[in-house]
Structures are given as C-alpha cells and as structure tokens.
Length: 317
Image 1 (cartoon, rainbow, N blue to C red):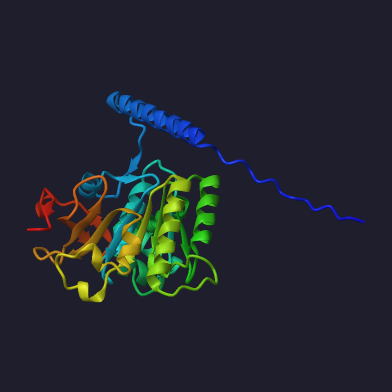
Image 2: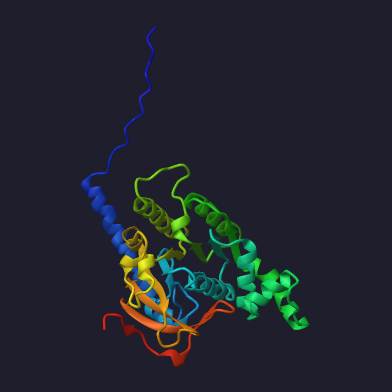
C-alpha cells in the first residue's frame, strides 16, 4: 500500500511590482499621517507624543522621550543614573499618563521604595530607611506623607526587582501591564545585567549586549513606548570630564539602537550640588553638548537650576 506524502505548499512570493505597490501605499500613508500631525500641532492639538524626562533642560535638547525609541542614561558607579531614571519615572507618574514599568537588577523592592518615597516626600533617604528600622523618629507630618506615598507609588510605578531577567520576560511583563492598566515608559537598571535568552551562550559580551539592545528596541516599537536603559561606563573613563560614546561598555552594541545617549559626569563648578549631563548622541537635536543640572543626593532628585547655566554648551571646545 502506497503511503501518500503530504506536502506543505510553498507560499507565493510577491512580485517586484506588488512590492513596489505596497511601498508606495506605505509611503503615501506616512506622508498623509505626517500632514495630519502637522495640522493638529498647528491647531494646538499635537498628536505626536513625547514624554518628559523630568528635566525641562534635557527635554529641550532631546525633544522629550518619543514612543518606540530607546534612550541610554550612562555613568560611572554612584553617579546618579538610577536617580535620573527615577526622576523621569516619578515625574511621569505625577501626570495622568499610564503607569511606568521599572526593572531593577541592582536594588531590592525595599530600596527602590525608599528612594521613591524620599523623592516624592523630600524626606532624606537616610531618614526614610532609618525610620523603617526604628533608628530615627519622624514627625507626624512626615509619617503621614510617607503613608500616602507608600499607597500611591505602587499604583503609578510598577517595580520588578530581580537578580536576573531576560528581555522576553521584560516584554511579557510590559505586555501584561499595558493590557491591564496601560503603559507609558519602560526603564531597565541596567542593560549589562539583562540576558537575551535563557541558556543561550555568547562568545563575547559585546554580542550578548547587542542582542539585548536590539531586543529592547523591538520591545519599544512593539509596545509603542519609550525605553530607558541604564548603562555603566568604563572605569578608566570615569575621570574623564569629557566622556565619549566609546566610554560605554560594549559601546558599539548599545549606541546603534539608541536615539539619545546621556552620560552623567562630575560638575567642575558645583561638585557638591550638581552633575554634568553630556548628550553624546541625539537623533532629534544637537549632540556633543553638556549642561550642569542640580542633583540633591539626599533625596535622589534631579532639578533644573537656572543658576547653573541657561544653555547647552559644546563639548568639543
């Protein structure tokens, strides 16, 4: 008895003319959408959404955080990377935007909660932590402020604190949050600790980071939200007052997918109350510029301070 073999039919490939026709339709649709957005902006009803970084000065130079784009906040250890990302997250959380997803591979839920409470209430982090351990006394007003912050923050900032995670797991968490409550922003602290795929091995760390970076870019486009990735810079670059993109660990793998790279450095004019933000890549504006911004380390908050300077200066001078 002959056994009949089932063959899966090979799908017909579109012809060159069909591909050109599809490209033409996409091109025309894109132009029409741009014209609609332009008209809406002229009428004062902008449709192109750019979220704030939490700093007007940084928004000015990078044009805000755009949906579907990846942004890098980099710096040496203890430079304020997490605080800058938290400033962005908390500022967005105070608006009517959907919740923020904050992935932390370096801090526990408790540590991040203490930082968030301190940022929101402006009670020093040390006092928030000591009060929890019974080593500090708070006023009734401070206790009430902390109580309100503790109930409010989890509703606006979804935190996943874990020692290890893959981009696939981040994507799943982002998808669940977007489906349940909406999603405005994804933050990952930091990219060097994220695994591309469970069990997959790489010859070099650069290839591994490259796959992670590309996966986060895909996540940003799929979820239609901005993604902020925190990154370390090389140790020998920490003393350099004019950092470059090459100072990023595995810089080539990270830079390609990022719309902007912001490196946090020391302010030589105000070392105790400010830091220097170096914008080293910027698809939507000037690059290789710097500006000092206020940084209150006690509460982990970045602020614009006109006394530190009112404009971005060239990093090339």
